[in-house]
Length: 238
Image 1: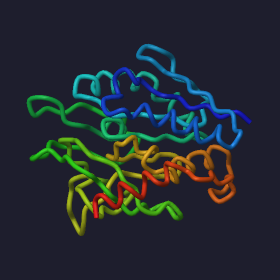
Image 2: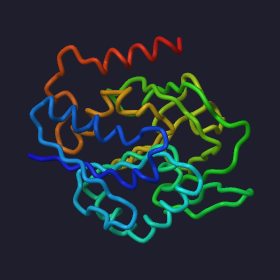
Image 3: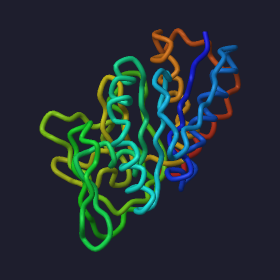
Image 4: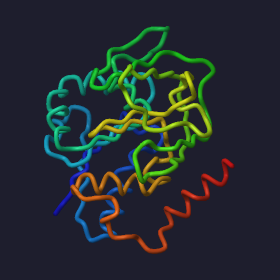
C-alpha cells in the first residue's frame, strides 16, 4: 500500500520546523518498505481529499489568521477527509481547530470550531522544554519544546493529549497542567521539535492508525537513532 501525507500550508505554518513531521513519517514508513508520498498543500491549493494523514504546524499571528481563513473555505473537505484520515495539529494549527484564538491588540479570530477548545492571551509567554505523559495507551512520555502566548481551555468533554510532567502545555491549571487535545482522528499539541522527530513512537502510532493495524504490529526499527534522541531529551529535562 501507499500512504499519503498532506502537509498543509507549510509556507504559513512552518515557523518551528514542524514540516519535518512529514519527513519523519515518510522516513519511518520507508524503513519498513512502506511507500509514503508527501503532498504539499500550498495556500490557494485545493485540499487533498483522500490523504491518510494531515499535518498542520505552527506560525505567527498573521500567517495563522490567513491559514484559518483559507482552511475555513475548505472545512467541509477536511471534515469529510477525517472520517477516515488522521490529523496532527501543532501550536497555531491546534488553535485554528478551536472556536477562537487571540490576535494582535487584544482581539480574537474565529477558528474552525472542529474541536471544543478556546484560546486566549496569556502572560508571560510560555517558553521551554515540555514533557507530558500521553493519554494514548502504549505511547508513554512525549518530549518537545513550547513557545506560545496562548492559554488554551478544553471544553467540558474534551480530552487532553497528555498530563504535563515538565512545562506548561496548554497553560491552564485546574487540577494540573495538560497539553493538547485528542479524539479518534485528531491529535493536537503545543509540542515542537518537530514532535514526531523527538517521539518516534507517536510517529509510528500515526502510521499504524493510517494502515489500520496495531502499533505493535509494525516491524521494529533496529538501532533507531530517534529512540536515542527521545531518551536524551527526556534525560536533559531531568
